[in-house]
Length: 239
Picture 1: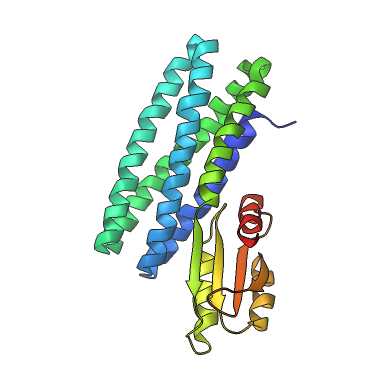
Picture 2: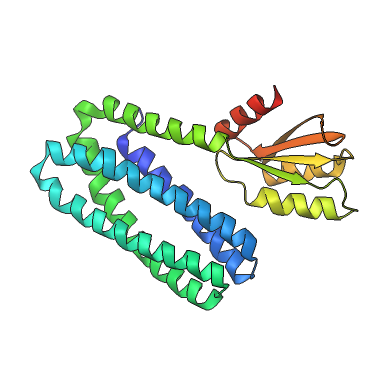
């Protein structure tokens, strides 16, 4: 049976992955990729904070007076992390790798300490105190995530490689799929069917489908394996 702690802990894992990918792009001075990934990292973090601040914390405070102190500390730490993330966005705009990596190191320490407190103290407290309301709370969380999923489904990434000579299309496509995150898919406009690409995509953990294009001969849709939100968005786009 799903627990309240499960859904919030999985957020931590997803956010951590995006965080480290943004750092890697900054280290390589790949600024547009870094901007894309950092933007999605911040979006995921803010969604996570919002679920805690609007759903989890009020429920804890309602059921236990002892929870007020810990949840207030978590809110303050959220504010500190939001400020650091804003600073990192400014660093990417200025292409200041050194300052970005200094801020990201500070943020990493904060996230680890914050997540440890939540996963070892706050979330187990929630599983225990809110056991009687667990189904209702999880339904509220899933409703919030569903709305977020619908917003993501409206975000289609389009890449036109129809006028590029080999190996340009393959290079651009692999760069673009690398920054796909949950709920997003890539629609590739191509005048050739790139058979070698399909093997590479499968090896890298992506699914794809093809249809006759409107602007070009082919349209190739690419999304991460097991990403049901993105797959639903592709299904809608294919109709």
